[in-house]
Length: 345
Ligand SMILES: NC(=O)c1ccc[n+]([C@@H]2O[C@H](COP(=O)([O-])OP(=O)(O)OC[C@H]3O[C@@H](n4cnc5c(N)ncnc54)[C@H](OP(=O)(O)O)[C@@H]3O)[C@@H](O)[C@H]2O)c1
Image (cartoon, rainbow, N blue to C red; front, side):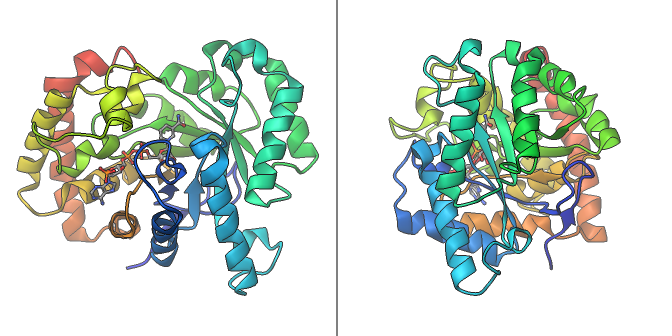
């Protein structure tokens, strides 16, 4: 069962449909040793993942440096020719959250260039595959100066392409008006259906890559949590439940934990054990027209392997299960989630 790939026109490079989210390996939350981070990356690679999503702020550069080390190892092992970017995994990074204060006035040409230079160094890449603005303040989406700098960085071959990671559908739609936009990263999962209405069709029409992040709603959509689940103090699933540290939507997809458990119970019931919930969630996202790839995070090699397995083409029997699941996703969303989620993101 092999990994599928999709090549959005504006990106011009194939991405494995299951990518590896690399926020966790930065160890901003939870304990992650270099060995366990490397185990996640190796497991993903071995399972056919060729697309890794990171950011300059994940572990203040640690996540990027681990990916840089992986690229060096692959080059020197002879798995890929040195400098042969296309034979090495595709790395999407993000820039703009290193500024303090994180405000529109910090998006100067000088800062943008400095952030990109640091990522080039961390990743050991002359030309970064993709740089995404990292959920910038809303005013930035209309600021041509910022996008002119990104275009100049492409001209100078410091970056091959640029995109945006957004919080809301409205930010995605504004960004889709820009001719050189190569990718949109947005939360899409069975608890987040609004992007299906306009964002996905517009991205598909324009050939813009659509990267679906937080596909498992921070683990809720694995079905492994219960009312008695507890999270460590430094885990955002404890300290950011109400958006105390960053946008609430990044934790459990913005879904209230108890409501999320009720929604999971309905989805599990619809599956009747025919497919594990995390696999159904990832496959369901990938079945939405316009989605290029999903980027689940993983805290172990085992999770990375299980997630990558959802990147194979679904069999006829799996498609039948997914059809049933799709109906349950929409019913559950309408009954439990639409009212709180739809107007916000
Ligand atoms: N603003 C942005 O641009 C932004 C924001 C957030 C995320 N992201 C990107 O999106 C990626 C994914 O987001 P995320 O990690 O927050 O959320 P996620 O992918 O929805 O959930 C990941 C969590 O689910 C659990 N998990 C994953 N696979 C599993 C499996 N097969 N079985 C059981 N549990 C499993 C793990 O929880 P445990 O730790 O409990 O094992 C893991 O921490 C990030 O790594 C990052 O690259 C970008």
